[in-house]
Length: 314
Ligand code: MG7
Image (cartoon, rainbow, N blue to C red):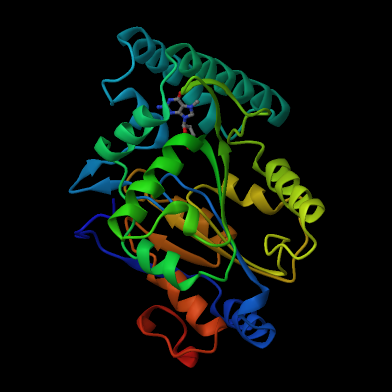
């Protein structure tokens, strides 16, 4: 479901306007047919807060659903308290961190399998939980029809799929009719309509790069004409620096990195850090119109949401 209100301030911040303008010019020259979107899900396509209250993530949708046992909820909480500080620790040895994150995701996914929810359960969780897409999601899905979009998430693919199903039902289309749209995440395997496994290896916060590479390679083998061959010009979207790992193992011509900075009130230094890594920063729960504006520019159209990008391009 798309949030109907957007009270928070929306700020788009460009740290190096000249560099961004050059990339935009290059991509306009190459044309919209060379563009591809790679996007994280939780707190990137979705909001961090609604009405001052923390919105849900994929994992939160499970724990708050009331559809899984108290034991599961308790275990999940304990694991979160143990592993979340490790995830956030910038000083930890990377290999050690990768191993611990793998361990966390394995435990968590085993626990979900033990609960054995069905596809219908995931649909119920997605429609009742507090996952809210950012404003502009429907327009973005519509306008990017011929632009391949790959959602790459360490969350739960079943919740992501169900959230998009709820959204696309709302806008009178359906998920399977979304062209050039794929999800790389922790998707389930079902038997007798219960989830019995997750596809391996699991996607965690540290290994998105190998999953993107694997996806692109598999697509290449499947169909030489397939639009999901990685196109040369990429818009990559994420809410944490680690999301930029998505592009670590792929080559590209131009890349526009869009960062969603949700936690500014928690750490005012983050803006500086994000400035170093991203070309465009959308603060708080800003909407997705800057991405739509970029696509309009690349398609040679006049921007209808034109107040967010360099003056020259309006
Ligand atoms: N994340 C990862 N795991 C869990 C979990 O078991 N419970 C909760 N509440 N959150 C979890 O979308 C990826 C994000 O999901 C969180 C296994 C991680 O903090 C990660 O950044």
